[in-house]
Amino acid sequence: MHKPTHGIVTAGLLVIGDEILSGRTKDKNIGFIAEYLTALGIDLKEVRVVPDEEDEIVTALNALRARYTYVFTTGGIGPTHDDITADSVAKAFGVPIGVDARVVEIFKTRAPAMELNEARLRMARIPQGAALVENKISAAPGFWLGNVIVMAGVPSIMQSMLDAVSGKLKAGAKMLAETVRADAREGDIGTPLAEIAKANPEVIIGSYPFFDGSGPNTNIVVRSRDAEKLAAVKSAVEDMLARVHDQVKR
Amino acid sequence: MHKPTHGIVTAGLLVIGDEILSGRTKDKNIGFIAEYLTALGIDLKEVRVVPDEEDEIVTALNALRARYTYVFTTGGIGPTHDDITADSVAKAFGVPIGVDARVVEIFKTRAPAMELNEARLRMARIPQGAALVENKISAAPGFWLGNVIVMAGVPSIMQSMLDAVSGKLKAGAKMLAETVRADAREGDIGTPLAEIAKANPEVIIGSYPFFDGSGPNTNIVVRSRDAEKLAAVKSAVEDMLARVHDQVKR
Image (cartoon, rainbow over all chains, first blue to last red; front, side):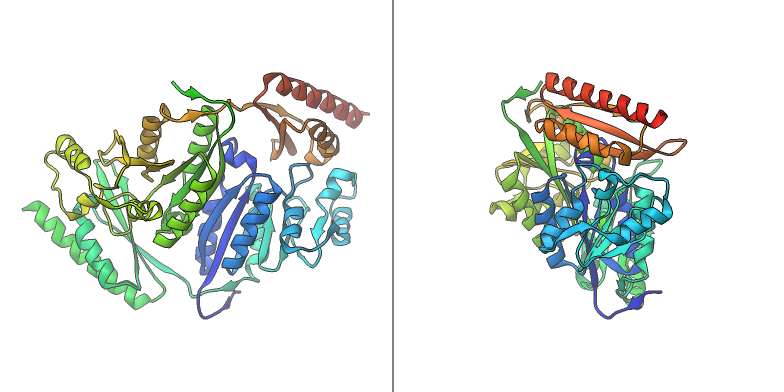
């Protein structure tokens, strides 16, 4: 399904919407997209959330699209006056935008009874040169221009659009991950864990504290694109934990 | 409790952590902080999520602290090698950082049995000139330097730190909001809603589609710092909706 490529494939995510910044709507897309891209072997490197303001969208989009293989956006492609993503993307790329005959055709086919009023035609505004991204849920499509993929903000629709483009994305070598439950406090393993991390610069070691039923505990997550290196570092972490548990017992 | 100020008080939020970008941990702090700041009359204007990499943290922090009244950060202040927020903040401000005697004292008082090993002393590293932010949950404090407030990533601890600083934040004139359930599809109200928005540039009108039990519906959220203008626009929206419902019935 995916075209494997050598090297690293990266992504940025731009979440567009006053409602996320006011706290009225709790974002559910960042975590979903992060997990989805990780599974494809694409490294999500940065997320920005900006308001429904053209300058903010254009500036953030231009910063992200210059840095990453792909930029995904969510939000702001509906039929109301606060939906300014398509126009902002056109401005960022310096291309014209207008009502796209392909979208009008989709509306007529998928929803023949729907009145194509001014508001709904707003959803047919697509920057010149963009490919459409299918929306299986509610017809109005997203689009793909350059390295930017523009999706809806409603999670079910966003997810359907992500599925629609996923087969066309370049995939990197997949990041492998192993989680080791430490059964120890972060502060008791931080020093030896730092030694393992220092000795293995090509393997990423994350340490994530959590509260289990009885007190503070830690998950150690080891990540690498190389299965052998991953296994070696996982073993080193397990050996270290055995030593720490042994010391605590004595 | 808050010092009301004239004018607008803004904030940026910097979420630090590979685990959010990999999707392993689903962020719960953005929505909480957004709602919390809105309730204080502080406008959250931008969020960025960056990995545990010093250059990325320093660049994002310097961009945000130059633009907004306050910058809040979450994550990266624990005892392990991947906790590099304090050092990155010191670097961004160009100030020295070292083990802070105030934090050592807190550890000794709050957890006298806890071994102050190298890893735990990492949590005592505080940039010069910073005020401490109390952590009621697990002792290791956050800090406040310039306009930057550095908090833990674990939600319960972050929330306790936010409570600890909230009384000291400048508060803006509070943004008021009213939600009107449209009982109509976005596409059927977009055109008249845009007219209301255009006639009332000082009032922010957001339109948020959702699926209710029977199909697509819309919430219209009207926001303003001026109660009278808010009420007038809310009425205009309700009148518009009555006309739309009347047309649909006929």
